[in-house]
Length: 193
Length: 77
Image (tube, rainbow over all chains, first blue to last red; front, side, top):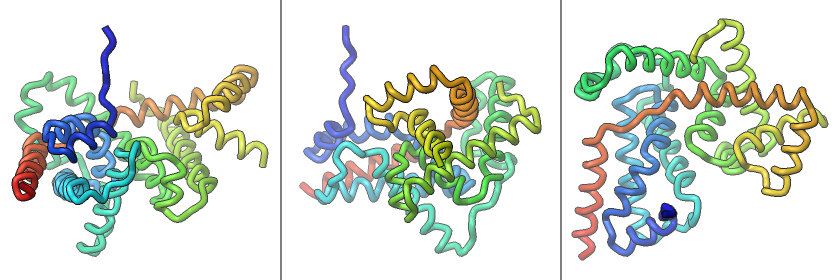
């Protein structure tokens, strides 16, 4: 039997028509990509939770007002909102994101960790933290393109548009970002298998 | 210049952004060029590392968003 996957477009349409369950499906489908993108921009779990919530409240209001016109591009549209909200947050607080240590980050998730195998979780956390630190070592412009493309699923064309550069520049930044990461991984013999 | 262009195309290929026909043509080029194949392998390796990061928002946060949605629906009616 074939699995029928309802498109984002259809879910958005049905949600606007009043089917609340469709929003839950959209969130379930995209929450990790959106949240990972935000957390990599702001480097703080609590701020990321706030921005995630603010982003979806804006999404809900826009959809309800009938102003949504990004058919077929639902995820990049939300990522764009989340990115702008993250930038606004730092403008308001007048500080730029810093690299956050792993300490004190997971209090919010204590009960979830206790349900998993602690050792596996520790190893997985270490790998994740190492990759996060590598991303934070990148120059800001390279990091931005990498996060928006790899985690936010935005096309290079869209990234070029929102960052105000040519598509060649966006591609160039991504290339340098990935090359830099590869070099660091090789030089430091970082094992992430 | 040509080198840069090919490298940029490699990125577009790795992120499935080339049009279908160009995808096939570029795949042939990769198969016939060992340097390009090696570059793609390196790229895939970094992509796999990046995939180790996957964060989820707290379930309570999602419930707040869904409640906000239900409340705004009620306001409309």
